[in-house]
Image (cartoon, rainbow, N blue to C red; front, side, top):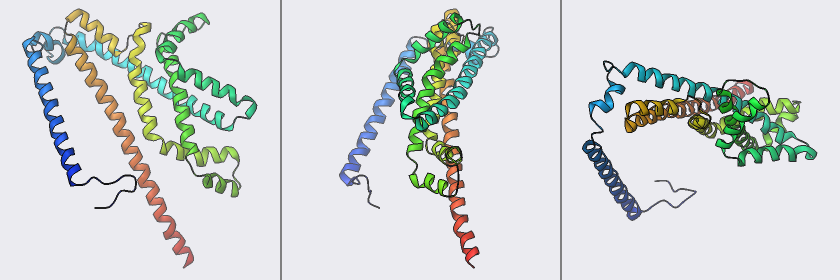
Length: 288
């Protein structure tokens, strides 16, 4: 067993206590789950009339229900897709502007970032939905949600990207300048690619937040996934079942995004390792 540099490795007694705590926690969770299942069964939540419209294709409400939910999911993914794209682009531009801004106007960039970051996202969504028509922009309701989500998340992504660039050793940019690269070449060819690789887990986590925040579209009556689920509940009266299905769908989508992030990070790490292995080999060949 190798000693940890960051913390003292637990001894036999500490490991034994950790195992006991894990077993007790698992038993408590199983007991709570068993109690919940028992209560649901006692209340008739597993009855066919509660689940039939969701799981039985022969049910008279199955097709209409999934058409309703499918349309809501499509609206959610569309709003999330536009919000993610715009947040990444605008967030990157904000980060670059804050880094390269002169002192006389940097305060304005920082002020915009802090203002949007400190405003609740639901307020930004509601304000955007009201402000766009007032400005004479007759856009679909989806854009009120997209603008609000973009305004909030682009500044979060800007701070993530800025932190990633700041974490890169200064020797990287110094070496790039030494070989004659210009400032924009250093930023886009050297610093930004490394920053995105380093901050990829944080960026993916923020994209998951964007997807979940689309559920706030109910504040402006946007027909997203959760709002369509509420319509189904009003007609079928199966609140727990519909919300459980909605939650499972969101979990699957977010889990897929997380796995894509992990896979991408591993692929990039393998690429860096292979490049580092090839460089000494090519240097040795040149020397011979």
